[in-house]
Picture 1 (cartoon, rainbow, N blue to C red):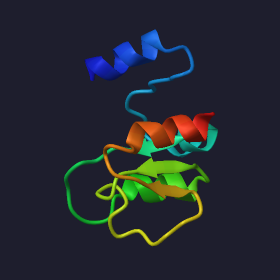
Picture 2: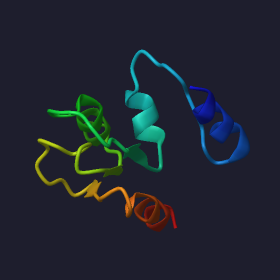
Picture 3: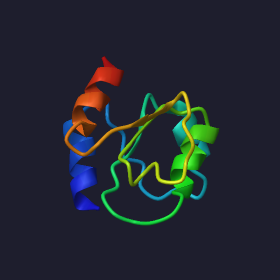
Length: 90
């Protein structure tokens, strides 16, 4: 994913890990995890893994599909996504 690698190089506090066998440690260390999904069906396992690791998660309605409310899950539409991320990181 060349665009993600470029973002990681350009923004000092963004770390792009790439593929990892077990992302749990990364989720635990992250200030914020995101699930900016716009299409798909069913429960998103990665979002459940993020929450299980204790991460705060910003997700679209699609990214949070099938997941009951959770105190660390912030569900927003695509137009609110960036604003919510900035709000939580502030």
